[in-house]
Image (cartoon, rainbow, N blue to C red; front, side, top):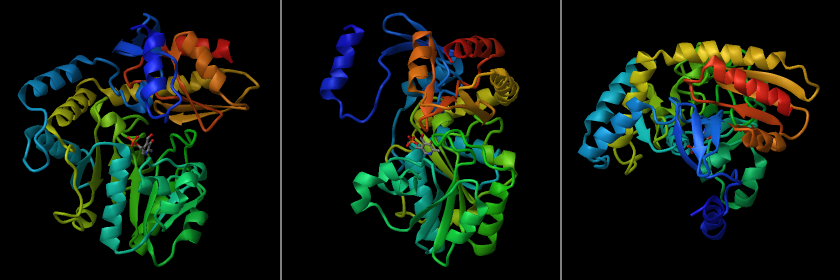
Length: 386
Ligand SMILES: Cc1ncc(COP(=O)(O)O)c(C=O)c1O
């Protein structure tokens, strides 16, 4: 089937939830992908900040292949070695004590909020405007986009309060005796790559400790090296009670998870939460390969070096249409003075995949293995396009 025939299948048969780019991607290697018609693209989007090691990384492919030949799924009722080995490895790299495996970011956040409510016995959760925490009903309620709430207002759970991001006074004003948790992204992704003041998370941590409120960081997008540390909250020198993760964790296989301190995690007992697929051997084998590659290939050093270079090259662009350039590591946003969708199309036609979020922010979240040469090529094309 050709591209047109394939896309017609979606038009005719898919439930209409996405505005898709009109290309059918076929294969990839490193930072490049090719469509069915043989067109090559530099992938500056990495499947919404997922493909940490790019496409087809040999270590990831090998780990998945080898595990698929041994055991793909057994359910959470039995132990499997990749899940156990991974848990130990990841926890030794963080300030957390316990893990729960989920399958996506929304599911991780859903579980994290349940855990915070169970731990505190309280009923309200504070999140921030322009945040994104997922599409399930509860994570939607936590997501700071009233337009996403609107059709489901009648069934959204109560107790979710949104306040402006990067505004500690607003958080203080929203806290009351029912507050169970505060959930924030260390850097907002979908909201427009918004980097908070350096002491914002520290202030939240302080308030949470004082009032025994659970501090949840949603690292679904910022985690796994995206911002130059294994987890972005480390850049702000805080120790949250719970962290949620997904996207980069498995380098492309659907996986998510919750990390929690012993104190908070102990609120869950068997029967409180669960999943059929979470922590399966296949995805955990992939996640092990990702963590090993981070170490062996010094991925974080590349994120920091190339990320800084990328930001500085973007800041050199002298154009009236550019309102702001911001980000950390390889999570970078370029805010325009007008809507950005047309530039996404133009750049795709020139062989570059990017995304526009919050209407005017071009978002760049490439694979973490991208090089300065790739950045040069991209910035030149962006400059010409703008
Ligand atoms: C910060 C954040 N949290 C949660 C989610 C939801 O993750 P998922 O789409 O895997 O459910 C996303 C997705 O973009 C996200 O960026």
